[in-house]
Length: 247
Image 1 (cartoon, rainbow, N blue to C red):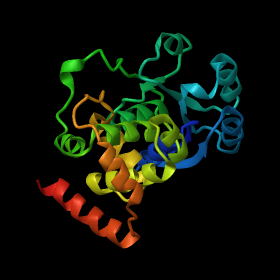
Image 2 (cartoon, rainbow, N blue to C red):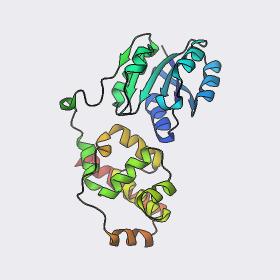
Image 3 (cartoon, rainbow, N blue to C red):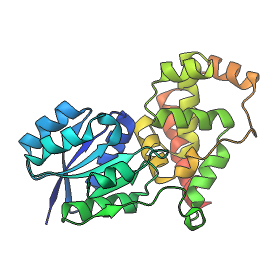
């Protein structure tokens, strides 16, 4: 049996990354991606009976939106920010409630449960701090990144563009672009989307950043001057990916 999925999220990296993750499941067919509630309603009307995975932030009036979506026989799983409280959504009788910190297997399990008429409510991220599974690959990647590079990764998955990241960290956009290429090389990815997907799989990259290993002014100056060619980036990426997989 195949389930039709519509992913709605106003954070582009999470929306596209989540759709990619769900799309690799044999029994899922992602039929739409939406950025807001009006587009979600249009998609639900076009694909009635679909399972909807929606960021909680797409509306401030979930009771009204939920009622409107019920006309299209859609089942809804809501994804909350990690600091949000799920009680209100549970009380509204949403069959699926998740957090941004959800693992890829639990994400698929929740969507599958909701699509089949069951309930799946994720425990809060802090509920089981001792049960986190070790992530050797993620740890290796994290240990290769400087404090500033980890800050850039965190801002990236929050939907910041290079220009916004530059403003947030007090750099020029060109410096951030060059940092991005360095991060791609160190993590074995080739673009922003792959980095977002990698981070979704390896959430240790989003752990609080310690004051250790900050980048120096000399590093910033070097990255300001340095230009990377696509050829060099691809070659370095290939080596980084092999290294991450074999060490």
